[in-house]
Length: 89
Image (cartoon, rainbow, N blue to C red):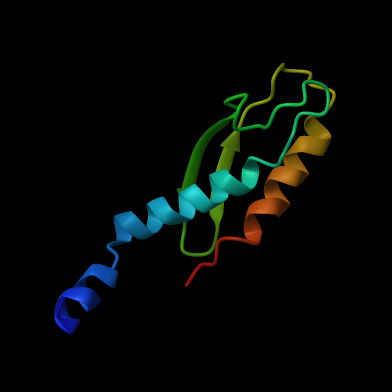
């Protein structure tokens, strides 16, 4: 393979870069567990959307019930955890 082909393959489009960031966030959120059920917010399908702005990622999440007693604990964990694996340019 020539150097030109290798460098072209390493370039990522904005769509690919965003998909990679989203994957990292979803992987990080896999460790956020509902303490009552013992499943992750990913396994429970509580993450509805991950959107990016130039400054941050916005994660839309629903709770298992409208008055989920663990909501006040789950939301901050969901906010803090993904900051580590994803870096914005």
